[in-house]
Structure formats: C-alpha cells, structure tokens
Length: 90
Image 1 (tube, rainbow, N blue to C red):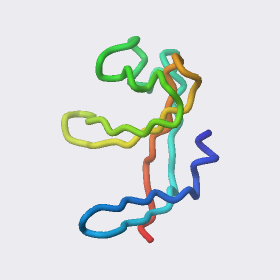
Image 2 (spheres, helix red, strand yellow; image 1 turned 120 degrees about the vertical axis):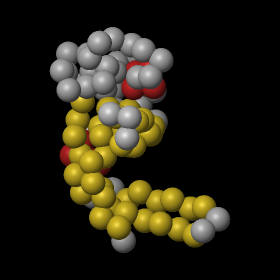
Image 3 (cartoon, helix red, strand yellow; image 1 turned 90 degrees about the horizontal axis):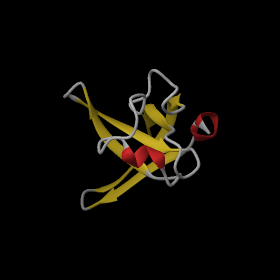
Image 4 (spheres, rainbow, N blue to C red; image 1 turned 90 degrees about the vertical axis):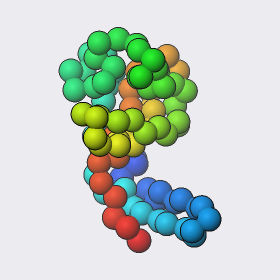
C-alpha cells in the first residue's frame, strides 16, 4: 500500500482556496509486531484509529511537537498504517 500512495495527490479545499501536493515519501507501519509503530504496545485511545477501517486518514502528535499524517491500510481490526513523510507542493 505504501508504494501505491507514492505519487498520489493530496488536495485540500477550504475558504482560502485549494492546495495540492504530491506524496513523495512514505513509511509503512505493520502493527503491534512493528517496533516502530505507535501500536506496538497494543490498542490505546490514541492509536485505536489505526485498527481500521482502511482508507481513513488521521493526524497525530508525536514527541509533543510534530503533527504526522497517517493513512490506515490494513483490514478492519488490524493496526497498520502508512505515514506520509513528505509531499511536493504543486
């Protein structure tokens, strides 16, 4: 799924207009068995969204200072997601 997101366009429309960016860097997290995943210690209120359904995008705060965009990728009930690490503004 991570490879499939590369090159995908993110589009945001709001009162200030439209912003478009191309996804150029991603990182996959394979759930509790993935030691880099924020689901590695099991399900919590903070990471419950990661367990599905797939296709949900969510933003979370890491280290108390960085907003990160993830897309849920696994089957419903399986905590897996792809982190959008970098985009190219268009």
